[in-house]
Image 1: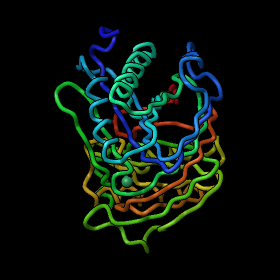
Image 2: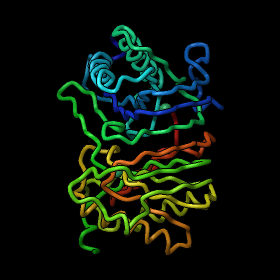
Image 3: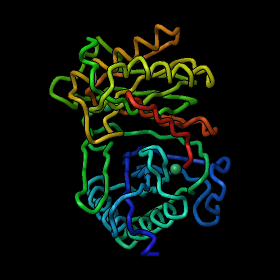
Length: 157
Length: 157
Ligand SMILES: [Mg+2]
Ligand SMILES: [Mg+2]
């Protein structure tokens, strides 16, 4: 598992949501994640939704670093749940699906190890969703997690 | 105005939304766009929401090209409204706010010239929003508009 994490970057878009719900509708890739591995549906209040794209990069410990960043944000925002939501739209250089799934599972596990309540949406499915963003200054953040530096861009519209 | 467009790239995240509403809450930059220039609030059904980030690049006609891409998508999805929604989170190399505002206004104007009903959310404001994504295979798309090539990434989760 750890080997699979070598060489990848995580691009994250964090939304602090008054409410977030989603529902998997149909497969979007050849071998989508089994719906027994992640929840086909979810409905949360006060959630930190982490839209997550795994792309090619140069990091060996990206899941650990990402978890550490998100833990810090969660300590400020105090969401009831952190939702790791696979998202292909934050980069055009995507990691292969199997690698992306490994990284996202590891990422979610590392968050749980820190005591956060974590849900993970299934990878490889078209999903409908409802997202209610609070709109306070910290309710939208983007982060790029790589080896050299961790770029944190505060919302600056 | 046309000079200001020189040298920038548009990163777009398109969501086909059953419903999209937003409300500007407080300024996020020193000189946010006047709320008389764009709508402080909006509430739409069947909207194509275009989350738009302007970053440094090499294109001279990015607004025109972007409008042409979005027009094509809109012709398929048939939204009632296209909402141009300034968004700083699709890149970490942002254009200066004045340039970004110019590009986004031009982008919206070019869409209107094609006969689409277009609303533009104000630039430089923290905004709360509610987004209901349909979840059909074409309901999430990302596009990068630049001179050399126009990368269109179909949702592949
Ligand atoms: Mg995805
Ligand atoms: Mg913005």
